[in-house]
Image (cartoon, rainbow, N blue to C red; front, side, top):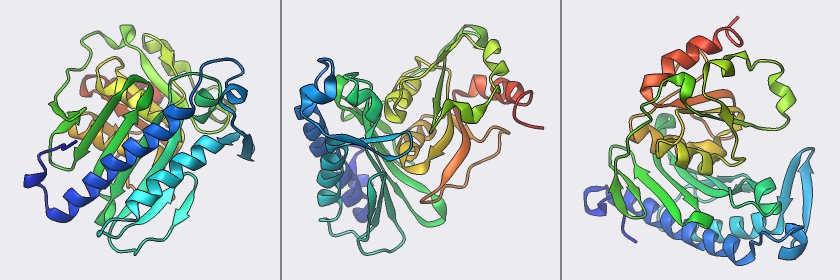
Amino acid sequence: MQENNNEFIPTSIAEYLKAALIASDAASEVLMSKFSSINPAVKAMGLSSWEKAPGELVTDADLESDKSIKKILSGINAPADIYSEEGFEENGGGEYSWLVDPLCGTNCYASGLATFGISISLIGPGGALVLGVITMPSIKERLATVSTKTVTRNGRPWLPSGPESDLKNTLIGVSVGGSWGTIGNNLTWAGETGGLISFGSAPYSLFHLASGHLGAQIFFNAGVEHIAAGVAVCQQLGLKVTDASGSDIDWKVNQTYDCVLISWPQYHDKITDCFGKDFIK
């Protein structure tokens, strides 16, 4: 599938984009070939699961998806080291690095819930998010973008509209890396919104944000590999991406961010003002 009018993209970036799209297809096939909603899902899928760290579930499906992605990304004539949720792979170094989450929403997947996705992004010189591809295999949706180019939805140019409701009547997505206890009682701002929802997967959440189903998506304790691809897509659509204080974010490999706010512009300042009551002391 050709996306983002490759003839107008520099050759090396077009090569990276093509690899990311092929890799997302391969990972989708791996995940969907195993997925089952029968309870208990892990047993029905014949998967082994374990914790790689307290509260961090991993399954055979994570590793097989990761393997399929790395095989494709490392096989192109455009070097870039691969920083994945499931381990680093050196691949020529250079100015670019891949950021990969081969199964974002492992707990959902292992529970038989279809709210999982795949994130593949490329970070370049100065922390620029060069491209992003988020894939939601269970609903057959994929968003892709290259910096300064249009966003495509399943291969077609896409420019959605954001919500038109007041913040008080608008859903806000929330995702917390690790324990929800890490954000303590800092949720009084939620009373200014239409309610909170958590999908358990960054790409799945950001697809719904980009589609205008949510006014904003807030990530607490988020690893860059989980969110970078979706951030690239949302920024290209004109959404605002900042920290809790409204400041720009410096994207780096192997980085975890305390708070990332991705919002349709009409809600951003209202949300950061609400945050001030809880986070900005």
